[in-house]
Length: 557
Image: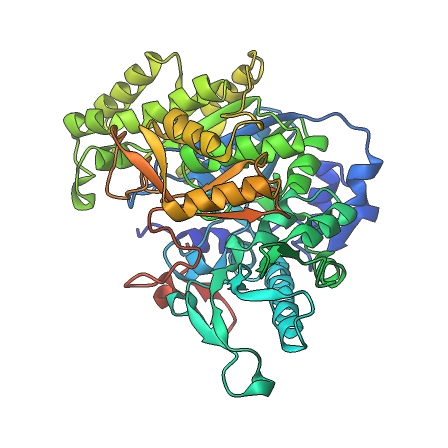
């Protein structure tokens, strides 16, 4: 019998009424805003009107991604269901999928197998319209900026120093660099422009890091869109845009509530990427989940060198959060890929390649334990081709670091396959934590980046191009030197070279551009050839996605 696809499994499950899920989570009906029967938004007033203590926060991260797949979201969902099965009061707080990857490479991002959040199709597509609102707010600001220049440019904006781009929630390399305003005087002022994918927009980060409507409005006003001929920053507040932008985002700021296949409450809100954005679930959603459960499982984008680092150094720093335990997800297949095995050969036992690839896992684990100071467990996402000898090798190497390995079978078994992991996580949450940031606020911009490169990536140093050095000096003079760093780096390597697999040594990371996101409250450092507007692959996932005459979608996974 053919194995069921993720979407087939999801479609076989009838979601429980979302009002019932909300009641199970302890959400009073007065805070519930229904989007049909299976989705809802939770009013942010809940956070102001509850005195409940925070539960334990569990971060799920992973090894460096490979084409073999790791299963971080699947593990997050299965762990939450596993915690529920062993009698714990638990929520899961996840990032929203972005249409670019859904139609590009990933084909979906709502978990997999029997560890999914539902309604899977809605979550992977338009969901509650949050991304539309983010894109609309982004592009309203872009329109008001260009209109200001068109109407006389009273602020003296230098057309060659405009930093704000337009946004669209779709991978489209054709839009990276464009020329706009052509066609005569009444069609705008001709200039070079470009698009970012919506999730790379500063608006996404602002939404994720805001704690209230007033905070949202302040952050929006702080966004720097350009510089004057004298080199002074021009903000959204200078353009009188922040009020209208906040109006577009007022509902998007409310966390979304859905459920897992097993009925565990799931908060899904904001922040997909961690290589071109901060890549974390919103602060408001995480805080709500913490107030409503004893354990909250959350995840951060890509591997621990990206998502977990930003979770710690940006999100936790700004929100005053601290994880009680960390789960590092790995697969035997992915580790063999890091050890030099071709994708087609990953199903065969290969202990030598596994041992060559294991340093990637061990470096992530060491970073979590000894840089972030948080107890952790390795979750091996099980595949039928894994052999006992391979699994024992992973266990033995992790034991040397004082870390246990739990076999995760949540894809095939749902929450039942996550009980071993759940018990280890509960045990870890009872252990002392020495939570720490990678760097302190008072270091220089270059020193902060160097700390990330040497402590987390284990490279030799950071190298700034002449342009980046000039930008660092300018940002410091403008008063932004105290901000944390959002490293924009390939997800496929600890280095800025995607071809350097495993745990490379003896490399430098080159930063070619620095940009302040004053609204979000961090500085983005662009490394290597990282793009804020990805392109579609040779065979986009969109080619497999379809809908039949009854409106039933296929091809999402």
